[in-house]
Image 1 (cartoon, rainbow, N blue to C red):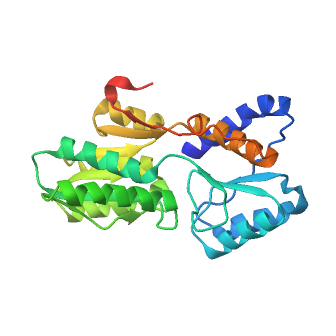
Image 2: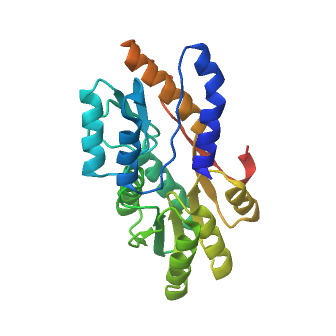
Image 3: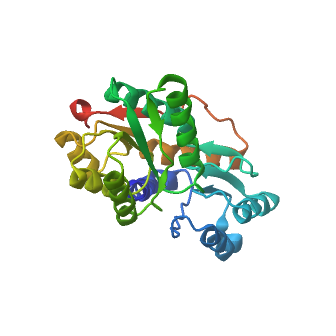
Length: 267
């Protein structure tokens, strides 16, 4: 759902970008597949243009592809999920460590004063944004929540069906789970598993979709952390244009905020 919104925002940005003589080409690749990313870059060849905003996974072949683009003079920014140990020039997205810390702070308040286990659901350990959110989450949990035990995360490959299957098994096998942080991907599967299990859980998840909206209203989910995909798309375009033109970047304008929604402030 999140990347459907991203694609819609890219399409919406085309008319204004065209007025500034910017042509936007959008390519979708299978999720969590570094070779598909490299193949897409190679197929573009010299048609790749002046700049590339890349949603990438952590992989040496992706880092090498970014390095080759930079050698050719193509400006590269990582988008949504970072590849910090590459030659990308900037990252456009939220502070994911901070997002994880916010999720932990919220869950600490929702769960209190109960003790028990906390489940974590992610898309993949190859996604830097998911790794960083987990890092921030554990920082707060370990420092401030000795009564809560964070379980090894479930990797759902960004697919609702896999998430539902794995989480349903975990909930069936563990009656001590009192909280859950879904840090990205397959959220519909998280919601379906929780509703089927009928356990009393405090839940923080990501991105507002029709499923998370309904789950917030029903009380299945307590809070949703949101990144403004419209801002992220516009920021990526502005940053790439500034890099291509060797012009300055307004840092304050390009800072992507983390928003928190509960049932009472849904947009």
